[in-house]
Length: 470
Image (cartoon, rainbow, N blue to C red; front, side, top):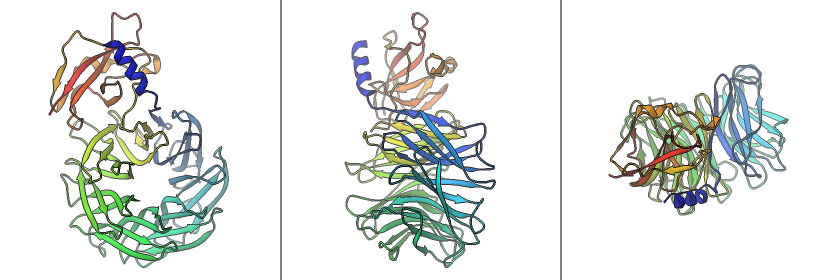
């Protein structure tokens, strides 16, 4: 039994997975991550610990295992933030966001081009004398880029969605505004198969207390082909949109009009004309939201966001896997006992996924396998204990208080208690007391416990079997 377990664990661990933090003494937040040509990662966000003053744009470059290669802070003494990053043609990176330290006034859309070491090659600002900013950047087929954001300097209303098309040097080719007389915003842009664009965000109901999830479809010059809103009685917002394999669209955001709680993650599938095919809500009684969505090769979807489980748990990064109809296949949580937020999701070249956000006030980077799982990270061997029979669990897994004494594996000791699947991959960090396991599929799991007092290797862990049932 022990031999079989080790062989399966070795095979499952071939794919690199990790969960890491990056930050200083103050606050950092990751808003976007992309995989680099060498299978490493570039993360864009903001830092209060480093830079020239107040918040600065921050880039973190890692290798394939999440080890830091370099970090750079950008900006001045006012508030500066990066919300998007892309690999630049010819090497290096392009990061976009907004700056209050330079530009025409208020805040402006801010674009920084770096070399492969993060050193600045040039910067551009776009905007007027009021407040303007960007939250999304996407490369285009002509080696240029499209930027989506918001403007109060131009357009028809207090704020409007703003789309900017630039060339590879950051020079403006054209801009377009979208919206009415209220507070409208474009949060994300994707390039469509025909070279046009699809935007999602918030459309203000003419100044009313609430907003609708908003879709805008344009041609390659940014001229509107159609717009759609999903009206409701409360407040809805779209945070990410992607064209699907059938030419329609998948949108993720948040809704206060539908679902179980205050806000719920909202997943919307439309056809090519923006007509709704189905919607799904996910979440509990608190504030839950979705920030990123990607379609998988089998036609299903994977979504990242954040969820507030029932007390005493803190907010967690939330990964959901659905089929093509939006029905849940599995869910995963990350961030342990710290307050954590999920902001961005990308599929990786090895078939896994990478996410970024915030945990413990640091940038949070999580690389998983295709099932959203992290490989077992013990430094010592794992022994399956047959001293006790398997425990049957229905809904809640109770952990003894004395298991909280286990420390991190950095010093060579066993990491804190965790629930592993049948081949040794971590699916859930455990805390003393009741642990909610209702989101996990029924089956055989293992609880990694404290070090064996009889083992001659102090890093060895004892694993006890658990059977989760409905």
